[in-house]
Structure formats: structure tokens, C-alpha cells
Image (cartoon, rainbow, N blue to C red; front, side, top):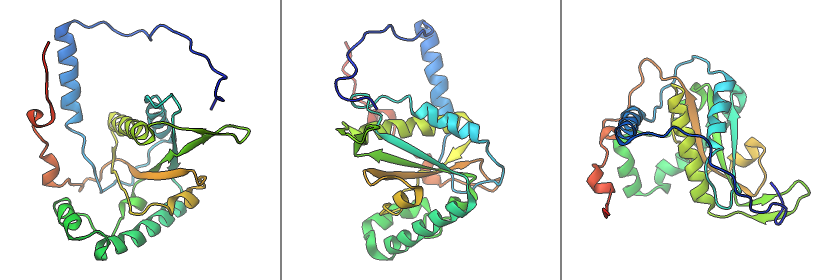
Length: 231
């Protein structure tokens, strides 16, 4: 990343984009909505391999996300190595055993019951790829100088959402897996202490026997998530 003061404001024209009339705009976004409604988190993966180029293109799309002061406070680790995936699964299941044996509390466990989760995490070794998302608490220049990052959770959240959308666009599925705690992932992935693991995304093609929880089809209606003040 550039040092503070090295880059001054410079105005550039926005990228070229298609100008749509009202009907075309509505049709386009409604088509996108219908497409995104087909996206679901999946826990059962086919052994079919996924080319590395597809995964890196998805991550490149995530890297176009907006961020606080354009600091891009994220790092993605893509893992196909079976031995490394096995170590991550072992670490995740160790944390999950503590979680499900009382660490989570009754209310949290009751909320998870309709999702059908448990201690065993075969998706961490079955999926051809794992993508581990890290948030950078602060940045470090090439000469070792630290600089502050801004709106880190918001920025990384937007980038992760764009990554999930890109994965769906590639015809793949993923799962937003968050073992609690996740600090074991930093050393496993060779990441520095100032990077906090946020999420593991197993990525691949769904198994022929894959299912999704029925409750996952229940989305809040638009009037429950939207307030409009028309002009």
C-alpha cells in the first residue's frame, strides 16, 4: 500500500457503462434478483475439481470492493492442498466440540437447530477449495511502516459479499463457515498477527445428494427490510 501523503487526489472519469432506460434497468435488476434467489449455502460437495483460475478470478472480483480510504484491508488465502485442508478441519472441529458442548449457550444452539449444524465438518475436506478471509487490523508498507485502516469490518464484509456473489456467478456453491474462535487459522495460513481470520468459505460444485435447510428458503419480505421516503 502507498504511504500517507504519497498519493494526492486526482479526478478521473467513471468507467464506461451501458446507459439503460427505466424498463431495461428494472428488467436487469429483477433478473439479477431471480438469479441470486437461487444462491444457497451448501454443505455437501462433489469431488469435481475447480480450476485455480476460476477461484482467483472470484477473489479478484472481491478485490474490486469499496473500502475505507481505499485501504482494501483484506487478504484471501485459497487452499486446495488436502493436508492443509485436513489440518484446518481438525482445528475447526476442535473448536466446534467446545462450542457445542456448552460454550455456545442454549439460546445460540437452539437458533442453529433448524440449520442442522454439528461438530463434524466434512465440507472442510470435501470441497476442492477453501478460501479463508482475513481482515487487516492495520496496514504495513513494504518498509515496515504501519498505517491505520478504517471501517475494516464494513469493508471486509462488502468484499466477502462480492466474493460470494462471484462464486455463485461461476456456477459454484460455498458455505460461510465461522468456527469460534478462529485464531488457529492465522498460524495455519502463515498470516501475520495483525490479520484477523473472519470466515472460511468451502468452495466447489454441489454433490448430487446436496440439500439445503428448509428454513433457508424463508427470507424476510421486502417490507420487513425496507423503508422508503419517496421524493
